[in-house]
Length: 399
View 1: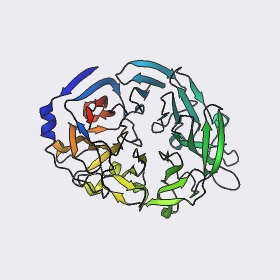
View 2: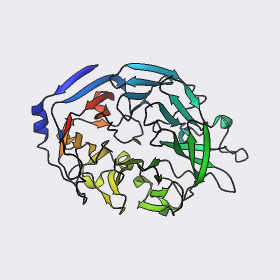
View 3: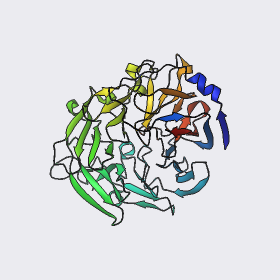
View 4: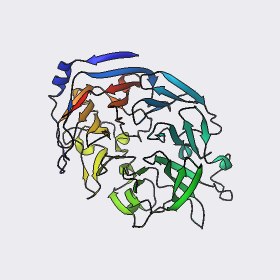
């Protein structure tokens, strides 16, 4: 491990970069947070965000789940020390690199198979972080089936686990072929203590394999999910609903085509806002204007879609663990000195340019947000250094 301390002078110079924001909300009475130089960057002997290598920081920032190129799923400390590596068999599962979800208590990591790429062996899996045991929760009966043969339907195709706040289990989407429907989406819950699945209800709209992202609202009573693929383009975008389904699903955000369909869903800590990211940057890599940024903030009360920054092309973002601060990454090939990691401590506050460079979230498909852990650390991959992982520690004080 190699440590670099960014001197206060470099941080002060970075603050000269002008920023703006298009947010109508007022600051919500959280304690004023300030950034104290120096910021600490720890380089880890690991790479991610390329070659199916993926790394996800735990909610408290103490551990990293790491999928290697060698058919291993590992857990490291945030300082880079290996706790364990568990082998898996690609003939049984090819993990979806974007599906890894830590339980809030950091005892488990849930993930799904990458069925929609490999079209085989769907299933939900659970990694016990304390023992290193890897367990298949679903899909064992579907191993070896072919989705092209309609006479042998899958028992279920599971996607996007999202944990309950108390770590007692998680919700997910299961596609089921029943009652004449062609793999319609259903909301399911897995109970960790009982080891049982519960079907809750059908999800609307009922597009075949349209929903790929599901997230639970911080209040534990609502969900937001995307519709990314569908023959009916009017269904594309973000939808919100209650867990119980006692109210009709609400089309929260409509988009013109699949390129603009949200691929990331990330709630602010207070649950009033969410971040989304579409895939337009993957088709237009030279985005240099803020209007073409793939990242937006959505006001859940009004459905209004807003820019993260009105003067910089934001590529990736994630909320702070408390309040409504935000970390975001800018990449501007025309003005490279503007590229790097920025942090804003709260709505209406000043944005600060903390690191210069070309960084990305450490998952290959960029379907995960920037994770800002509760210990004020952020895990990124440095593209300019071979996708090496770095842990950024933010030195903060509240007053």
